[in-house]
Amino acid sequence: MSEIEISPEVKLNEEEVRAICQAIQEGLTPAQAAGTDPKQLEALYSLGHGFFTSGQYQEAQTIFQALCLYDYRDERFWMGLGASLQAQNRLAVASEVYGMAALTSSLGNPVPLYYAALCQLKDGDLESAEATLSSIKFIGSPEDPQHAAIYAKADNLLEIVRERLSEANQGAPKETEK
Image (cartoon, rainbow, N blue to C red):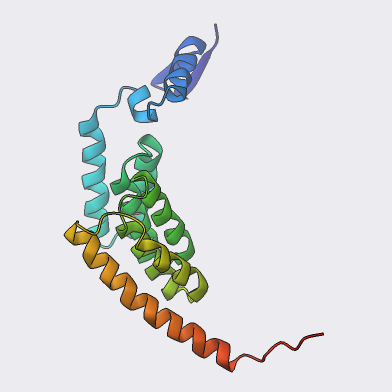
């Protein structure tokens, strides 16, 4: 049986690789399949958060990317990656990553989509921002105070976006029928 070298210290045989692949197919995250202690993931999250708060956005991005690979189900990891990208003005990618964060919560939390809309607005993509802001009210729970606050912010931004779109459409030349 041949061995697969992961690093000079780690070598897996074909049976071990198959076992990991089988565990992932059965619904385990790569971190669970590899037996990673959740405390190690928390330590990495703290490291990424520390990099982010100290303005080291590229370093934070690297940590959060790794965390998203290890445990793609944790919304915090996607939010950290989105924030790191947003801070580097990589707005289109940040918006997509915030969308992934929304999916990890099974669309139960409107906060990631609110941040996605902010990125779309800053990037000048009014149409996407309008669609995102319009969808926020269908996510989460109106009884949750944090969600209610996001709904109100999204409604206010949606009104502004629609005004800007209307102004842009009024200034655009009208299409004639052929």
